[in-house]
Amino acid sequence: MMNNKRKYTRKNKNEVVSEQTTKRLPAYKRQPDLYYSHVWLDREIYAQILTFIGWERPKKYSVKMAVRILLELGLKHYIIKQVNLAAKEKRRGRAEDSEPTEPTGFIKDMRKRTNKMGLPPIA
Image (tube, rainbow, N blue to C red; front, side, top):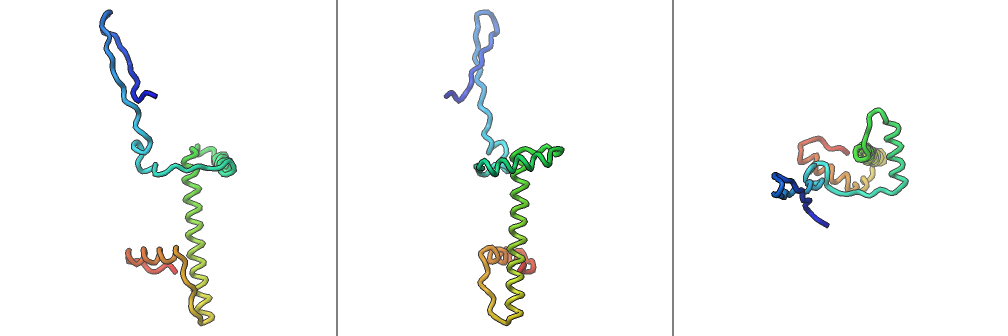
């Protein structure tokens, strides 16, 4: 496998000059903010992503953009669900005058981050 392609040009009839063209930069160097890891999808999830692209046909999403959008939506849903569960546990503990349950790792991490940023606690 050759790294560089050679291109030959002729200046005169007897003179052959060779020029080397460099390879294209890899994706992680061309788009450093968009390329951190490679993710493999199984056929079922890939088919669902293609279905999503079909539903949003006028927007002409690429597979990469559709996966990004769906991941963002899924993470938002997860965060909202975790915060609501923590708030529900806190209310239940107050109503029963009992010890609150041990917070999940997500809630502990979010409390650290909100304290560091000076924001009010989330749950």
